[in-house]
Image (cartoon, rainbow, N blue to C red; front, side, top):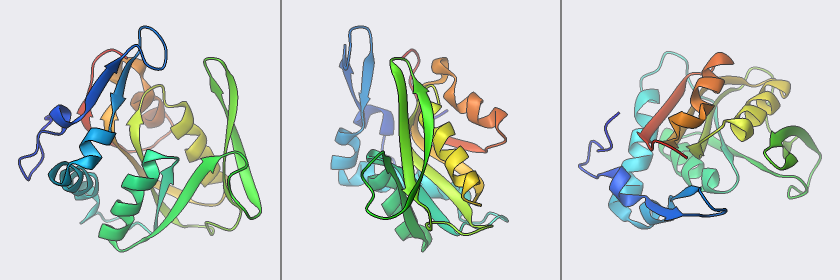
Amino acid sequence: MASGARNGADLKKLIRTIPDYPKPGVMFRDLTTLIADPVGLRAAVDELIWPFLARRAPIDLVVGIEARGFILGGAVAHELGRGFVPIRKKGKLPHKVIGQEYSLEYGVDTIEMHADALVEGDRVLLIDDLIATGGTAEAAIDLIRRSGGEIVAAAFVIDLPDLGGADRLRRKGVDVHTLVEFEGD
Protein backbone atom coordinates (compact mmCIF):
# COMPACT_ATOMS: atom_id res chain seq x y z
CA MET A 1 0.00 0.00 0.00
CA ALA A 2 1.52 3.30 -1.08
CA SER A 3 1.46 6.26 1.28
CA GLY A 4 1.53 8.80 -1.54
CA ALA A 5 -1.53 10.36 -3.08
CA ARG A 6 -2.27 11.20 -6.69
CA ASN A 7 -1.56 14.88 -5.94
CA GLY A 8 1.92 14.02 -4.64
CA ALA A 9 1.18 14.36 -0.91
CA ASP A 10 2.80 11.77 1.34
CA LEU A 11 -0.12 11.04 3.64
CA LYS A 12 1.86 8.84 6.01
CA LYS A 13 4.40 11.59 6.67
CA LEU A 14 1.58 14.01 7.48
CA ILE A 15 0.24 11.77 10.28
CA ARG A 16 1.85 12.42 13.65
CA THR A 17 2.63 9.48 15.94
CA ILE A 18 2.34 10.07 19.68
CA PRO A 19 3.92 7.30 21.78
CA ASP A 20 2.24 6.01 24.93
CA TYR A 21 -1.11 7.71 24.33
CA PRO A 22 -3.74 7.11 25.66
CA LYS A 23 -1.83 4.48 27.64
CA PRO A 24 1.71 3.09 27.77
CA GLY A 25 2.66 0.98 24.78
CA VAL A 26 0.14 2.52 22.37
CA MET A 27 1.37 4.45 19.35
CA PHE A 28 -1.44 6.96 18.73
CA ARG A 29 -1.83 7.93 15.06
CA ASP A 30 -2.86 11.58 15.14
CA LEU A 31 -4.71 12.61 12.00
CA THR A 32 -5.09 16.25 13.06
CA THR A 33 -1.73 17.10 11.46
CA LEU A 34 -2.91 15.67 8.14
CA ILE A 35 -6.25 17.51 8.16
CA ALA A 36 -4.55 20.77 9.14
CA ASP A 37 -2.44 20.59 5.97
CA PRO A 38 -4.54 21.83 3.00
CA VAL A 39 -2.73 19.63 0.47
CA GLY A 40 -2.93 16.64 2.82
CA LEU A 41 -6.63 17.12 3.52
CA ARG A 42 -7.40 17.48 -0.19
CA ALA A 43 -5.33 14.37 -0.95
CA ALA A 44 -7.00 12.30 1.77
CA VAL A 45 -10.51 13.24 0.63
CA ASP A 46 -9.63 12.65 -3.03
CA GLU A 47 -8.15 9.24 -2.26
CA LEU A 48 -11.14 8.27 -0.10
CA ILE A 49 -13.60 9.02 -2.92
CA TRP A 50 -11.50 7.76 -5.84
CA PRO A 51 -12.73 4.11 -5.79
CA PHE A 52 -16.35 5.25 -5.63
CA LEU A 53 -16.47 7.77 -8.48
CA ALA A 54 -17.32 5.27 -11.22
CA ARG A 55 -18.74 2.39 -9.16
CA ARG A 56 -21.62 0.39 -10.49
CA ALA A 57 -23.13 0.40 -7.01
CA PRO A 58 -24.05 4.04 -6.43
CA ILE A 59 -23.91 5.67 -3.03
CA ASP A 60 -26.95 7.43 -1.59
CA LEU A 61 -25.46 8.63 1.72
CA VAL A 62 -22.15 8.92 3.51
CA VAL A 63 -22.14 7.93 7.18
CA GLY A 64 -19.33 9.12 9.44
CA ILE A 65 -18.36 7.90 12.90
CA GLU A 66 -17.72 10.49 15.64
CA ALA A 67 -15.52 12.51 15.62
CA ARG A 68 -12.87 12.52 12.90
CA GLY A 69 -15.25 10.56 10.69
CA PHE A 70 -17.43 13.68 10.72
CA ILE A 71 -14.64 15.81 9.27
CA LEU A 72 -13.69 13.34 6.57
CA GLY A 73 -17.19 12.04 5.94
CA GLY A 74 -18.64 15.51 5.49
CA ALA A 75 -15.97 16.36 2.94
CA VAL A 76 -16.46 13.03 1.13
CA ALA A 77 -20.25 13.54 1.04
CA HIS A 78 -19.76 17.04 -0.38
CA GLU A 79 -17.40 15.82 -3.09
CA LEU A 80 -19.71 12.94 -4.04
CA GLY A 81 -22.78 15.22 -3.99
CA ARG A 82 -24.46 13.10 -1.32
CA GLY A 83 -25.96 13.70 2.11
CA PHE A 84 -24.18 12.97 5.38
CA VAL A 85 -25.42 11.02 8.42
CA PRO A 86 -23.54 11.14 11.74
CA ILE A 87 -23.09 8.18 14.06
CA ARG A 88 -22.49 9.53 17.55
CA LYS A 89 -21.67 8.39 21.02
CA LYS A 90 -24.67 7.59 23.21
CA GLY A 91 -26.77 10.55 24.33
CA LYS A 92 -25.50 13.11 21.80
CA LEU A 93 -28.31 13.13 19.23
CA PRO A 94 -31.46 15.20 19.90
CA HIS A 95 -34.16 13.11 18.19
CA LYS A 96 -35.36 9.49 18.43
CA VAL A 97 -32.34 7.20 18.06
CA ILE A 98 -31.38 3.59 17.62
CA GLY A 99 -28.23 2.30 19.24
CA GLN A 100 -25.70 -0.47 18.95
CA GLU A 101 -23.49 -1.73 21.75
CA TYR A 102 -19.95 -2.89 21.10
CA SER A 103 -17.13 -4.24 23.24
CA LEU A 104 -14.04 -2.31 24.21
CA GLU A 105 -11.02 -3.74 25.97
CA TYR A 106 -12.27 -2.04 29.15
CA GLY A 107 -16.02 -2.58 28.85
CA VAL A 108 -18.98 -1.85 26.60
CA ASP A 109 -19.92 1.35 24.77
CA THR A 110 -22.84 2.39 22.56
CA ILE A 111 -23.11 4.38 19.35
CA GLU A 112 -26.34 5.84 18.02
CA MET A 113 -27.91 7.39 14.95
CA HIS A 114 -31.26 9.01 14.35
CA ALA A 115 -33.94 6.38 13.82
CA ASP A 116 -35.12 8.15 10.66
CA ALA A 117 -31.65 8.84 9.18
CA LEU A 118 -31.83 5.98 6.66
CA VAL A 119 -34.63 4.44 4.69
CA GLU A 120 -34.82 0.85 3.52
CA GLY A 121 -32.36 0.27 0.68
CA ASP A 122 -30.18 3.36 1.17
CA ARG A 123 -26.70 2.56 -0.16
CA VAL A 124 -24.13 3.78 2.35
CA LEU A 125 -20.42 4.55 2.33
CA LEU A 126 -19.06 4.40 5.90
CA ILE A 127 -16.14 6.75 6.68
CA ASP A 128 -13.81 7.01 9.65
CA ASP A 129 -10.24 8.08 10.19
CA LEU A 130 -8.77 4.77 11.39
CA ILE A 131 -9.54 1.07 11.51
CA ALA A 132 -7.86 -0.76 14.40
CA THR A 133 -9.69 -3.73 15.97
CA GLY A 134 -12.84 -2.87 14.01
CA GLY A 135 -15.23 -2.88 16.98
CA THR A 136 -16.67 0.59 16.43
CA ALA A 137 -16.88 0.18 12.66
CA GLU A 138 -18.54 -3.22 13.03
CA ALA A 139 -21.10 -1.71 15.41
CA ALA A 140 -21.73 1.10 12.89
CA ILE A 141 -22.25 -1.46 10.13
CA ASP A 142 -24.69 -3.41 12.30
CA LEU A 143 -26.55 -0.19 13.11
CA ILE A 144 -26.76 0.80 9.43
CA ARG A 145 -27.99 -2.65 8.44
CA ARG A 146 -30.59 -2.66 11.25
CA SER A 147 -31.82 0.66 9.84
CA GLY A 148 -32.38 -0.90 6.42
CA GLY A 149 -29.21 0.52 4.87
CA GLU A 150 -26.92 -1.40 2.56
CA ILE A 151 -23.17 -0.99 3.11
CA VAL A 152 -21.48 -0.31 -0.22
CA ALA A 153 -18.05 -0.01 1.44
CA ALA A 154 -16.15 1.32 4.44
CA ALA A 155 -13.21 3.68 3.89
CA PHE A 156 -10.52 4.78 6.32
CA VAL A 157 -7.39 6.89 6.04
CA ILE A 158 -5.37 4.65 8.38
CA ASP A 159 -5.30 0.87 8.75
CA LEU A 160 -3.56 -0.86 11.66
CA PRO A 161 -3.46 -4.31 9.99
CA ASP A 162 -1.85 -6.07 12.96
CA LEU A 163 -5.05 -5.44 14.94
CA GLY A 164 -7.22 -7.12 12.30
CA GLY A 165 -10.11 -4.65 12.01
CA ALA A 166 -10.18 -4.43 8.22
CA ASP A 167 -10.19 -8.23 7.95
CA ARG A 168 -12.97 -8.37 10.56
CA LEU A 169 -15.13 -6.10 8.36
CA ARG A 170 -14.30 -8.09 5.23
CA ARG A 171 -15.52 -11.25 7.01
CA LYS A 172 -18.85 -9.39 7.43
CA GLY A 173 -18.99 -8.95 3.64
CA VAL A 174 -17.86 -5.31 3.62
CA ASP A 175 -15.54 -3.90 0.95
CA VAL A 176 -12.80 -2.02 2.86
CA HIS A 177 -10.71 0.78 1.38
CA THR A 178 -7.74 2.25 3.30
CA LEU A 179 -5.06 4.77 2.35
CA VAL A 180 -2.05 4.06 4.59
CA GLU A 181 -0.95 1.31 6.96
CA PHE A 182 1.00 1.47 10.20
CA GLU A 183 2.41 -1.77 11.54
CA GLY A 184 1.89 -2.54 15.21
CA ASP A 185 -0.63 -0.70 17.32
